[in-house]
Image 1 (cartoon, one colour):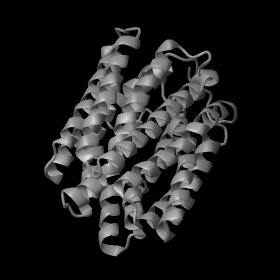
Image 2 (cartoon, one colour):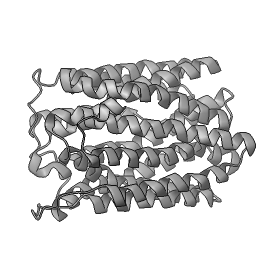
Image 3 (tube, one colour):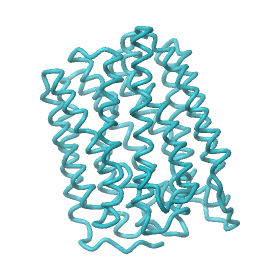
Image 4 (cartoon, helix red, strand yellow):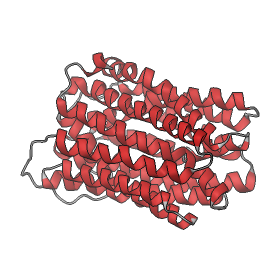
Length: 392
């Protein structure tokens, strides 16, 4: 990871540490939320899909407008600070939840925070590296994220070994690293302000480059089948995994991503983003097919660790591809369009998955995801054979 950081600016490195601390907190909490809902609060399984879908989609408007607002204001950092701050408060909200509606409120707070920070943070990264470093920069950012995603579940696991089923205690502890992330952002991230004012954005594909429109079509289709990871955790729970084991499982998944993030980011700078994304989508399809047919705990372990490979090939790379395709004068707004499309797809994706899981079979939502991932990969393959040169 030290080698990966060479040549990157202090701001890019600091943003990586912010994400490490934030994901440390988030992934200490996230794997426990489905079992907390169903086993502690007694909520039905369909509420998992409702909560995840509403939370993601309610934030989708902000994922468009926060990017534009950061363009309009000529500042990215205030929006990132507000977003990370709300995510921090959501951890305390979860700890105090008494019903599934309270959990919905806490998740909304967290996702609204993500909606505020996502596009401005990504633009901060782009504006603090050269075009030839984008894959490296997002790969470094993704690697530090995944370090947090490994450490968080491991700390939660150790806590639950001492205080069995004390999920509220884990949620409260997660507040601390999240707050540290906000402090690092406030003290270590600098930006150059611009006074250029931008027109108010509209949710439209008009004005986007043809290649970016094709890319967004593939992304949107994939997102419609990519329901919340909470259903992967429910699938593991259905095969006997306890809360502490779910944390260990999630740590193993992210451990794979830590080891491969550097390679994926730098490789995408050399061979292009699209080959890695296509490979990632096809791997995702095979993994979800495996979840549909899994019958033993060992199969779940293998599938979760393989899921880390998919995550590595797509998460940072697809953001770098967005940076390649958007117009430099509308970078915040057009990046926000990407996030908004993914967010809008989250509600139907998770609601459909919850309905299929509860009324058809536990395997049904995973078959649907497998098919949509294959079709999305085919759409990416059919994009213009020559990817456009970076716009700077």
